Image 1 (tube, rainbow, N blue to C red):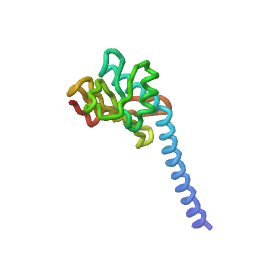
Image 2 (cartoon, rainbow, N blue to C red):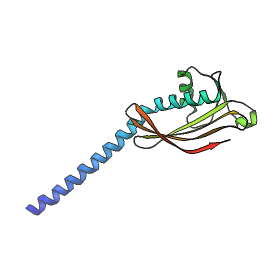
Image 3 (cartoon, rainbow, N blue to C red):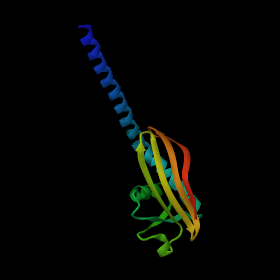
Image 4 (cartoon, one colour):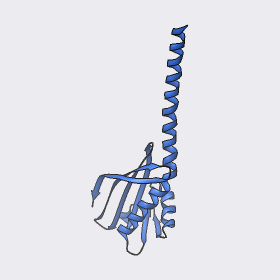
Length: 146
């Protein structure tokens, strides 16, 4: 009788731990979804200020998150035009591009690129810690300069 109770208790404990971990992962992705618009707006503001003094830029169509980036550009009051081709081929400057990924619960990764003029630009990856609407930049990786 005692052995059955101990084994049953272990099963209950394992199930409880699994449920807690699963709940934490799900809440992390929900937190990312809530914080994503804020992070995107902040990054869009930084990029537009980097590339243009007039508040105008081109947005590369075809990037994974170009629709949500359009919303972010509208929310900061920037004027923009969409370009469908490679900006280097069409000589469309200044341009920005962003791609936001939610790979890890509670962390967002923003891959970004910008160019003010030919051969004057840069980009990289910025990581944010997100907690249900608040987001703090953690650091930047994969920085490049043209």
